Image 1: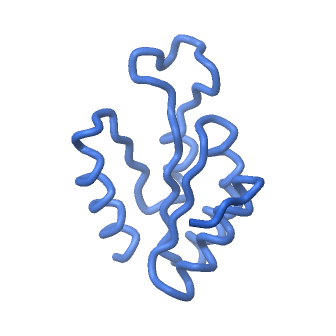
Image 2: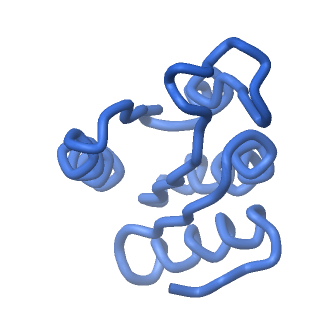
Length: 106
């Protein structure tokens, strides 16, 4: 785990790691944390690099109600990724991550 001061740097570093070692992963906060990764995600997509961005999101109960940093991260990422997944239940997290890794490596 490496801590970065900005989400963009985390995503670019994860892309570099992916190109050298396999799958790169960056975890970022919701809203602007996700949007700050867009350039790195597009670069990874163009290079066919297996990059996974884990982005925070608003609670399911608060979606679309104007809560802090509530954006449609799926719609933003869908055009520049192989897949844009969401996980609304903790019990589905491992299955969703496994699916993301398989897609990234395909």
